[in-house]
Image 1 (spheres, rainbow, N blue to C red):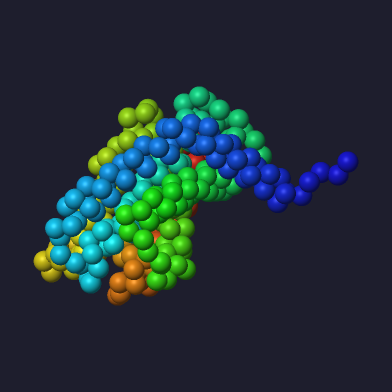
Image 2: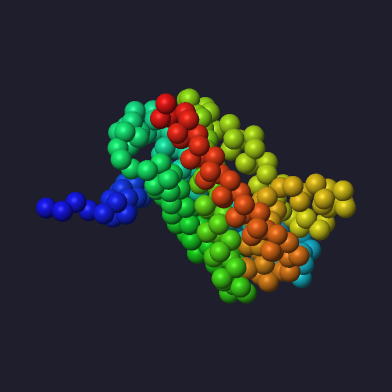
Amino acid sequence: MTSLPVYQKNLIALKGIIEYELKRVLRIWRQTLIPPLINMTLFFVVFGKFIGSRIPEISGYPYIAFLTPGIIMMVIIMESYNGSVFPFFMSKFHRSVEEILVSPVPNAIIILGYTLSGMLRGLLTGTIITLISLVFNPFIPKHPGIMILTALLSTALFSLAGFLNAIFAKNFEDTSVIPTFILTPLVYLGGVFYSVQQLPPFWQKISLFNPIVYIIKSFRYGFLGIHSEYLTAGFTVLIVLILSLFSLNLYFLNDRLKT
């Protein structure tokens, strides 16, 4: 019997990682899907309806319409990050990661498998939140291609970031340090609840160092058609960060876990 080509073996390994993690997410859906849905629905109710009804229009749109793409992207970012950091850390915690690391599966395939599984979790949750948002703010995307591309690149970026966190994490507390002290502040200061143009000039320039500003602006452009002068720059930043994080993951997976 002839052996399978290397690329087919790698595809089988990749499929196995993704299927396992996707089944795990769906199996414990009460923990993985319900909490973000409740939290984001509360954002729509409290900020969109109760408070938003008293806020003037922003960029020519009611506040809830302006808020909707920010909330959707916020949950996509958070869930794609969680979708890779916890699965890989748990495989380290239970020492099942050793079985993967001693197998002939290339490190790039391992990283890609966990990254894609995190992306699927982020996109799945983001899709459900988008459907829920239709109850509060019926809409038709102005540039759906831009919106989808932004979502795909964003999930890839933060899944890779979560994987990097998992490589270094030594306990459960370590998996929450970056989301609590870095990711959450960046998201809340990234223009989810306000327009960066409303800030004083100095703080507008400071905001340009926050990559989430570009993500929110690009997604909002695809969603509402609000012009963003940083659209090309935003996609460039995302692609550069994705390639950089993938390279870092590849290096540290070799350096920290295979030595």
